[in-house]
Image 1 (cartoon, rainbow over the protein chains, first blue to last red):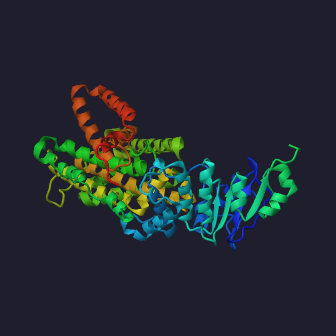
Image 2: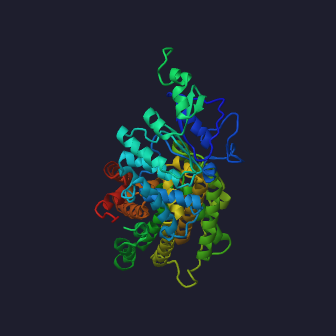
Image 3: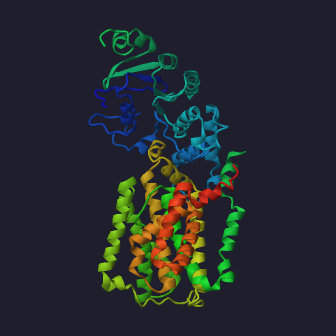
Length: 233
Length: 320
């Protein structure tokens, strides 16, 4: 998978949908932005700062968080432990080995406050691997939120979730803080047009077009290559 | 339940733990003839505890953990032979040196996982073993280090043939290291280690510097392994090449897996079972005793994937 000639600017607070056929390079783009892949050329900036040479964990510290298409969780940690871990890492407490965890009441309470609006309060004390699949998808988001991101990249947050539940999941996403920039990859066009304020279309590793939902819906090239209305397949 | 109470419950001392530590005093009363064996068990348990910190909590599989045990043993032995024989300071120096070697090697170790990691640790272990073998002028080579003389503990308690002092000394050091380890795993750092074990890929995505965490725990584990090695050198007043052998690395891994990794007590329980079994079986037919350990290992791994302690834990669920 490759991505090239990408010129993308994500202003604060906008809800972006990143769409495109399989193999278009959507996940590759997220990997490039978060530092899990190194670009051969080009630069990535977060706000004013150039982050091109930073490692993934350093980018997270500066406010760039992501979730994964396939659940990338901590199976034998409880949901509360996992989110508390992320909060403690953000606060710089994770190097401390002499103070017991209950002393970090602030971090634990914050983890609770992150789980509650995602309807994970009841699941907090259960091991991640015992949670229902939909709850695990929400925990993916909870872990990213615990890093207090400025930009949140969601790689198919509703992957594998039944259609009726995915709307619920996107309701939770649209309820996130208004100053948070969100970019999500999603294949269900109903969801995309309902929850995105801007849409980016990728094809063959390049950005084909970006614009408002109305512009994208009306765009002839998008209809041709992506929405399947063309006959040049 | 309040969320902080959940974490409080995790670190609470449970009655069975207290009972276990009281029971470690029993050998003084019921088996005074076996105090030397009890001392060896305590030392092996400490060694297994150090492996548990890296394997059970951080997910670093090592087949060369004897390297640090051996560094500790030779440091303590050489110190007593050529410099001074006061045991506690010897223990500190041996632990510090093993920790230093651990810190240096950790920079290589944390870059690898899975098979490459196992081979690396194995290689480092073999390397040190042969280095000690060839440096026979210093280490005594295959004949072992002779002439180690240890001063009485606090200049009062002599290391006698019955092993009274040896067991008391080893047990106290084991308990102290256990308390430190317990503190570590219930800290934010300990939670981060479990995070690395559970999903190393996710850790950078929540902003965690995984390698720094791994280097730290590897250093701590090497230090504790070195202390265990030093205990063996001091209580037996000799150091053989065996302290650095592949066999010792493999044994401690078997002990931890038998007992149950990632539970702190798994290594301790494994050490008791393994050492007592070896003592008993080798009395019957010494050359075949690994047959029984092999059988036990196969049975436990097949039936109890979380070790004997993991199997037992099903009967004593922790309230959450």
